[in-house]
Image (cartoon, rainbow, N blue to C red; front, side, top):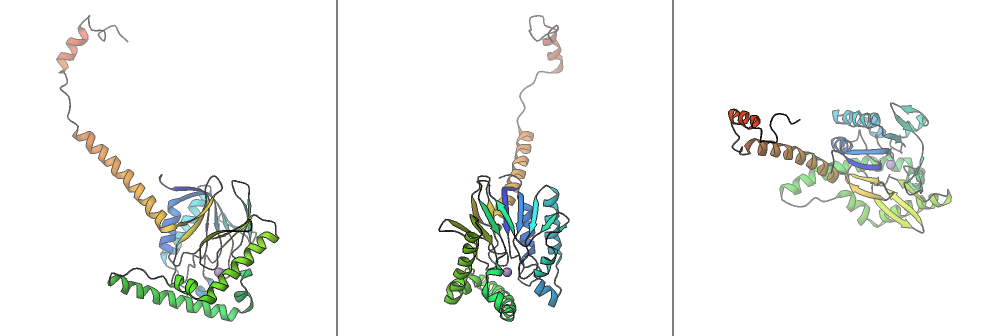
Amino acid sequence: MAQRARFRTVFISDLHLGAAGARADDVAAFLKSIDCDTLYLVGDILDMWRLRKRWLWPEANNRVVRRLLKLGKRGTRIVYIPGNHDDPARRYAGLNFGGVEIALHSIHTTADGRSLLITHGDQFDLVVRNARLLSALGAWAYDWLVRLNRHYNRFRSALGLDYWSLSQFIKLKVKSACTHISRFEDALIEEARRSGHAGVVCGHIHKAEVREVGGVSYYNCGDWVESCTALVEHTDGRLEVIDGLELTRQVAAAREASRIDLKQIEEEVESMPLPDLPTSDRWRELLADEANPYGPGTA
Ligand SMILES: [Mn+2]
């Protein structure tokens, strides 16, 4: 692996910067590890609901912003599609801030010519659309549960137990949530089909997914609160969900390895035993010798 992992396109969503559970350091490290033509920020990047209540802006958030600007400078096109947690940014759709294009939704054409609808997805979430109060309570409760879960897992790891995933528990074990997720997925697949796209890329429900339903592709970026996943498009147009933390580790290890290799080569070179070279007098003798083909007169 090179200094950075190279992709045609990278899609990330639900960073929730500004919320207690945000992992800005991990996001910044991930952004440092990638290189791509286009980066889509698929909503809930900033958690403005939380920021409005309490301004929580650690230095790590600035690192994320700087990484984004840097990617932009290196030639990556950055498209920011706000979600429900950063819906005030929707007012700026159509504008460009320091190389970051803001749009309500976007269309992406893959390397193999498929057109994908990109949207955060909350518009298709009936719970969010019909009961803002309920979803605000949901966000508040989720925030607290994430915090509680962190302490619980610190306690578990102190006891040598495995990580226990809260969101997996909530979203996979609770039957109603399951139905909710599948309804959400169905709604997005239906929207892609209705609007004539080959697939849809979204976020919102914090569950990374690559699925094919009746010829329509459903892609969900996942989140960077718990699962730290990204959806990536390879140069051949194939899309896959990757573990963002694992990719960061791999790139860091590759960087480290190349550094060690150089050091090793240096050490090897320095400790190399030298052959018995002729003394300078001997060289002069050799060069003066007419019989020597490398003697005077040869170019
Ligand atoms: Mn959302």
